[in-house]
Structure formats: C-alpha cells, structure tokens
Length: 182
Image 1 (cartoon, one colour):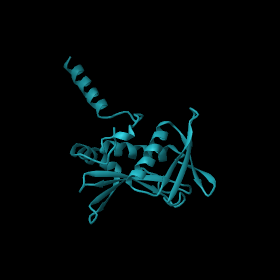
Image 2 (cartoon, one colour):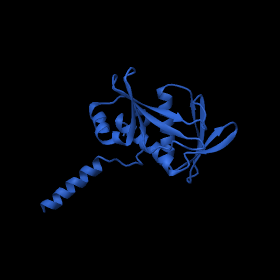
Image 3 (cartoon, rainbow, N blue to C red):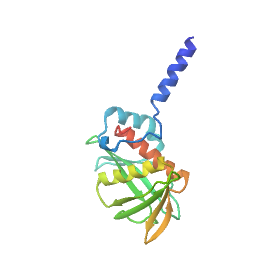
Image 4 (cartoon, one colour):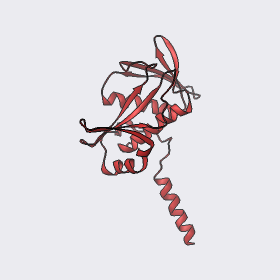
C-alpha cells in the first residue's frame, strides 16, 4: 500500500513539473519578467543543455542550445536565450546563419496537413519583434508545419529536419518557462 502511494505521488510530481510540449501559448500574457523560482529551475535543471556566454560588462548571460544545428549549407534560424539578471528579464534572440541572410527582413511561409498556410515576417526590431516572430514559428512547429524562407524571390527549405525544429521548440519552451509563459 505504501509503495503504491509513493509511486502515485512520484508520478503526479513528475507530470506536474513537465507540461505538455503541445500546450498552446497565450501570447497576451507573456512578459519579459523572470522570477527567482523560474531562474532557479532554469539554472538547476535546464542550463546544462546550453552553451553559456557571460557578458560581464553588459551584465548578460546568453544561452545557446547545445544540440542546435550549427553547420549547414542551407538557411538556419537558431535561438539564443538572454538573461538580463540586473533587471530580472529574459529575451529570445533570433540567430540566423549566413545562408539565411540578415535580420533586416526575414520572411517565412508555412503550411501543414490541416490546410493552414500563411506567412511569418520579421522586420528588424526590438526584443518584442524577436519574441513575436519566435512565438509564431513555435506555434507552427506545434502544428507540424513545413517552412520555406523567401529570399531573393526564391523559396528555400528552412527548419526542415526534426533536429532543427526540436532545437527551436525546446529553446522556446525553456524560454516560456523562464518568463512564466507556460
């Protein structure tokens, strides 16, 4: 009887600490604010999945997912998490490779098996623009969409394999936990 109770409590704890990766995000509730418990969780549980760059003078910590796609002939969009510990804020930062082009204008199209199609556009901007673009891509990854980058009037595959999509999804999921968006 005790063993069954302990096992039940363990399962409840495990599932309550690990929200579904398909959970939809209410974008209106997301702020850039972090709190002590979310930072503590990230540092103790998730930080070891990331490469860390400490920028002493700026008082920032930049985290890049270790299993991200770094080398590719085609376009890549990786994400970095930026912890601005001085102001208790965190940001998500788009990091395209050279094949993707610069961030002055980035346009992706998506479509999925449900027949949904659309465009996600990033125009050079601030932390909110980075977040809005990343959230839109994250939502479409959850919808199992295929992506194309529009560059020089051509459509190039991007986020085409499970490794690149999973790196993007995990980084966004960790970011949303850090800012209490999930």
